[in-house]
Length: 322
Ligand code: HEM
Image 1 (cartoon, rainbow, N blue to C red):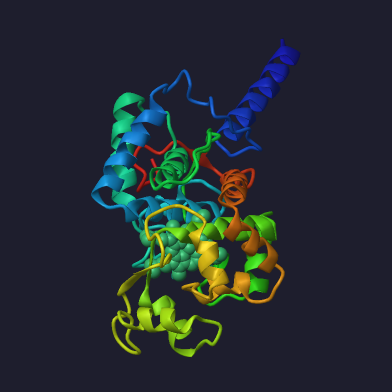
Image 2: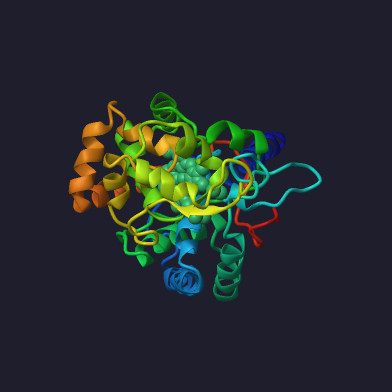
């Protein structure tokens, strides 16, 4: 009897440990079919939400894509960027690279409401963001791809991790290669992912120095941008990244770089006589090569997960831990 009790207790202990582990992130296998029985209409619900958001404002496709990048680069794709600050942590929204810049949170909230109505407490905010980013790209004319799913949401967020992991607009090529390398993304992945800057807008404060002080810039492009980005003031004035097709997801970003019409210093670093010159030239001539490499790199970036042992959950409200 005593032996039985001891063995039962040991078994119970093991069961408790396993249950605790189940709540923590493991080296998890993502799959496009993850919700095929638990939430079969997930993809159309997200698509509808993004279609309506992009119809209202085309830029939103870009803003959501950027949110996904900023989510995945900070402790993996875990919806951490979506968390508001709480009494116990300052989140990522107010970190330097995101404050007064990251946008589109209410679009994710609206989609989450629809997803919860169809499949309660089933689909993570991180997966909704991954699908919404894909749809944003595709709705603006970019490629479509199947998104592996099964991510979980973080219970916390870190302002300092966001500041440390996200590259700034003044970054050199070496810094960009290192920061993407820290996420196991190759220089080729980095150059392909940067093609996201074929859509969306930047605030004047992030490209002012480039248009007034740099020499590897097309003179008429600099003059054009100076028209809405004065030497002082107007910090938040917006300009499109892509001078050719502002809201079209295409390879014009690379053609711009070849013509020294990159908007940010970091953009032009990819075509400034360094290791990525040949690849930029290739993408500028081949939309299909860019498209294929962009999808490959998005899948790699989307596969970044929180380190094992991190507590995770499926959040009911993307702005708050449960
Ligand atoms: C390579 C390093 C990168 C740097 C230094 C960088 C920096 C920036 C900056 C400064 C802005 C303007 C923000 C503002 O004005 O508020 C921006 C916007 C944007 N970024 Fe990046 N970015 C990088 C890579 C990426 C990647 C990898 C993606 C996605 C795959 C991405 C997607 C976007 C998009 C779509 C926008 C426009 C957002 C909007 O219009 O709301 N960026 N980025």
